[in-house]
Image (cartoon, rainbow, N blue to C red; front, top):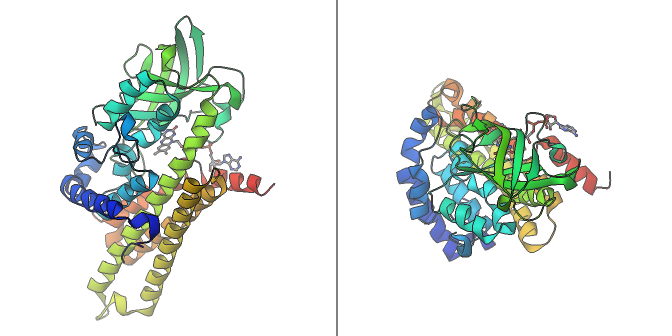
Length: 384
Ligand SMILES: Cc1cc2nc3c(=O)[nH]c(=O)nc-3n(C[C@H](O)[C@H](O)[C@H](O)COP(=O)(O)OP(=O)(O)OC[C@H]3O[C@@H](n4cnc5c(N)ncnc54)[C@H](O)[C@@H]3O)c2cc1C
C-alpha cells in the first residue's frame, strides 16, 4: 500500500530526503539488521555513515551541526528505516540523540553545544538520556538521583535504569535532583562516561529492540563540573516535559511505520501462500483482516500527522500528542498480532520479520510515557 502523500509531508525536498534515506537504508542497514540483533548493539560506524550521508543531523538546526529540517523530516527518516527493512531497535539506538540532545540545544551553553551536540551529530559521539530510575519512571517529579553542589562541581549519587544506548554512550543527559522534593527541584546535567564513581551495567536482556543496547547506571559521588548544567537549576522538569512531546510523536511514528511494514509484508504473503488449493488472499476472512489492518494503519498515521500539525502550528499539542501515541500504538499492536497470525508458524520463527516487529513494538506502549500516563494527561485536560 503506498504511503499517504499529502501536504507538508510531500514537498520536493522531503521526497528527495525519502529517496536518499531509502538508498542508504537499503545499502547500509537492511543487509545487517539480523547480525546487529544477534550482537545486541549497533556498530559505531553506522553513526558516521549516517552523518556522512547528511541523515544523522536531520531535524537539528545547522547552527548546532545538524542538517536542518524539522521533526517531520526526522519522522520521514523513521518511516523509511522501517519500510526499508530496518527495525525499531535500529531507530531507537541510531537516533538516541533525538532524545539526548534537544535539551542541550534548547537551553545549553555554547560550550556544551560544541562539546556534545556537534560531535554527536557528526557521528563521533553517542549520547543517552537518563530520566528513569529503578524506583520508578512514570512519576518523573519524584526522581531521587541527587546532585549536591561542591565548589565548582556537583557530586552526583543515585541510579538510573532502562537507558537506551546506555552501554555505548559517551555522555548522558541526566535528570538529577538539585533542590527540594517535587518537580521544581529537578535539573539536567550532562555527565561523561568513565568518570570515577560512574558504573554501567552489562546490557539488559530484553524482549525486543535487541540491537539497541539498554543499561543501568549507578552514580557514587560522581564529580561533574557545574558548567555541565543545562539551563538553570530547577528547569529540568519543564525541559523534560517539553521534549517528551517530540519523543511521544516519534514513538507514534515508529508505531504506524511498523504497522505499515507488517501490513505490506502480510499483503505480499497472502498472495503467495496457498492453503486448501487456494491463495490466502482469496478467503474473505483473510481479506477482511487485511482491510481492518489497513484501516488501523491509516487511522494511526492520520492521527499522528494531525498531532504533528497541531504541535508545529500551535503552542500546545499535549492532548493531541498523547492521543496520537495511544492511537498509533494500539493500531500497531493489532496489526503486528494479525501479521504473525496470518504468517502461521512462520510468523513465530525468529527468521521472519513480522516476529521481530511483534516483539519490538511492545515497548512502544511503555516507553516515553505509558498508555496509562497518556490517559492521565488526557483526563487532566478534560478537567478530571
Ligand atoms: C527498552 C526500554 C528503553 C527505555 N529507554 C529509556 C531511556 O532511554 N531513558 C529513560 O529515562 N527511560 C527509558 N526507558 C524507561 C521507560 O520510559 C519507563 O519504563 C516508563 O516510563 C515506565 O516507567 P516504569 O518502568 O518505572 O513503570 P512504572 O512507572 O513503575 O509503572 C508501572 C505500571 O503502572 C502504571 N502506572 C503508573 N502510574 C500510574 C497511575 N498514576 N495510574 C495508573 N497507572 C499507572 C504504568 O502505566 C505501568 O503500566 C526505557 C524502557 C525500556 C523498557
